[in-house]
Each structure stands twice: as structure tokens, then as C-alpha cells.
Image (tube, rainbow, N blue to C red; front, side):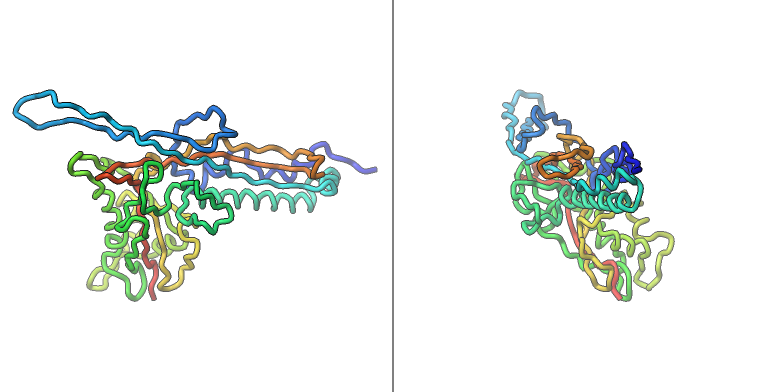
Length: 345
């Protein structure tokens, strides 16, 4: 006599989180939340908004007056919402096998498959939210989608340009952080000088600035590049190393947090002379945000008579928002990118 268990999916669904794992790992942990409520989140694709350019009339004079104040003008823009999802299916034969033994070898195999789907989901979230490597050769490329931190040379209110020395182009510093030809004062030359760009975003006429008091910074780089920098130390012109702090310590003391991600430079291999790219953002949660139009939802296994499969699906609909800064007639975002050489033999 065969025993059939009432809950055959228990041994598989143990790999499924009750909460969105992307909110606790990777890029999304640093992003802010934009308070937007959609009236039809399932069908709304494009979200329109206005950014107001404030018009002020302040004067420095011998007596107070009543100068005419021009209107503050709205600048319209739109951004496209997108879905992240993953799914898993089980055949009828697999389902019957799970009924016999919900924690057997087949259940272990299916758990690995489900875990693999979730891992790929997390990787996709980092890749498409950050968007630095997002390109038209992506399998899921959509020219209407605007990621958060992609290099951009032609800024608009809904897709501002970066603050690179040449907007749209990652700055190649060529600074070598460790190895035989390590550069003196490498941190200041390779990261500090790039960080200074945020202070340069200032409109001398309107007095508007991107930089504020008590700013925080995030440096996004390949895990291997940050590991090399964790083991590296500054050197002076006499060849003496400062072993009291490694480069990551210097970042922390400079109010820069390091964020490990493959979504910035997936090809860095840690070999000698290999260039590593990084992003630097300021006040990240204030300047780069998402709206969860539909929260992360898991639909448990259901029988589909059309496909004759048991189907599991998880989905999450998000809208990305970048805070635009209007400086000297240009729309800009609080992000810059550069490259360094972590190791040089």
C-alpha cells in the first residue's frame, strides 16, 4: 500500500522566502522609497510626473522692494515600470513522486532548481536596477526603460545625465592601488578627486547645489576589486607603507561605504593590470529610489490543465525614480563613474 502525503510541496518550498530577498541583499538595500500609489498597478506601464524649477526673486539692496517674481515652471517627464519575476514548474509524474516522498532525492533536486531561480532573480534585480551594464544586447532590453545609474550624456528631467568629466563616459584614472608600480596617494587621486565632482555641481547665479551638509557616499564595485583594496595600503614617496589603514578603511573614514556588486563590472578578474570600474553615488537613498507598484508576491504551486504542469510563480513590479538636479541649464544626477587598476605587478 502506497502512502500519499497531503503536502507534497513542503520539501521544495523551503527555499522560498516569505519576504522579498532582494530588499535585504544587493542594490535595493541602498535605495530609497518613492511614495507613489498607482490606481491600476497591474496595467499602468508609464508614470508621468513633473519636476518644478523654482523661480525666486531675492535681492541684496539698500532697501526692501517688490520685484516681480516669475512663475515656477513644471518640466514633465515619464518613466516606465517593469516586472521582475521567476517561475518553476513540476510535471505530473514529479508531483506524484513528491506525494510518495516529499523530502526525497527528487525534492532535493527541485529545491536546488527553485534556489537557482531565486539567485538569478537577485542577480537580475541588481543588473536592471543599477543599470550600469544595461545595453541593447541584453536579452530583456527595453529602450523605454530607464535604469538608475547608467552613464548618460544627454540628460532630461526623467533621465538626468551623470556628472562624469565627460558625461556618458567613465573616467579612466589609470591609478594603480597595489603592486610594483603603485601610485603615491592612490586613494586621493583615484577616488578622492572623483568624489570632488559632487562639490562642483553648483549654479553660481541661482546658488543651487547638489552637495549638502552631512553627505554620505556609496562606492559600487566588483567584489574582487574591493578585496584587493582591502589588502592594500597607501605608500609615500619614500616607499613606506601606512599599515594602520587599508583602502577600505580610508573609504570609511572619508564617509564612503563600499558596495560589492557584479552589476558594475562583471568581467574584472583580479589579475595584474586589469582595469576595474566603479560607481560613486551621493546620498543614495535620497537621490535613487524605487516604488513597489506590486509588492513581491509568490503564487504557490497550482495545477494548470492547459499545460498539464504544476506551476509556481513569483513577481515584483517596480518603478525607478532618479532625483533630477537642474544646474546651469542641465539636468543631472548624483552619480559618477571611474576606473582604477587595483593591482599591478
